[in-house]
Image (cartoon, rainbow, N blue to C red; front, side):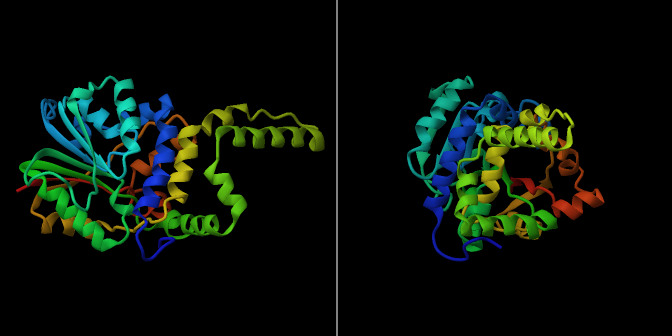
Length: 307
């Protein structure tokens, strides 16, 4: 279930992610994690596949993290689209900071619902964490057909969604998202959450236990585990106005209907530096019974080849 069941929330969603991405783009530890998520081994492609390839990141965002990752794998004709114009200077700065020459980059204001390129244009098309934030499933189907349209025959379409089912997605996250819309104090906390907020909480706990129980405990190590990356993760779960449950069956059907064959579900172990590293093994081992209980389908990530 999403907070909103109708209407157009695309501009609101873009504004939410613009603010989140501004924080991530300035955080070296978070950017290192994101960029390190992409490898030829993960995609299941040859070690030199991306060399000189023309790629599109549809919904590239302000961090341009996928574009940076694919540049490091060898891509040299790199295009990115997103809504509005605010993302462009931030993305250009992020690209430059991470060693990507801007003369290899083409950034455009555009929607995944109407991609401004001709048919069969790209060797590799990415849509990472975008489709689940569209307004409805009809838009997901339209966007997917656009992604497939601009992919060359023999090229690859790579899409990433979220998790469907499990305790977090079915119960905990919807309850938190609902509370966010109803309680202004909680909304204000999430909208402005920072590592300093958690540090103050730990200081209060340590002082309280010392004062009331006469014990000295050291929670300083926890402060490093609740960093900017974790704060933006919380915002990512809670702030976006729409969060569609896109099932694995629907994803497979979309690939098939749009002429994409040799479909493979991907997974990767994401090395984290914050508190989420303690659940990373469960995120990766999607067949573990506790993982299924907590995370349902596990993260849905797919790649297929256009016929």
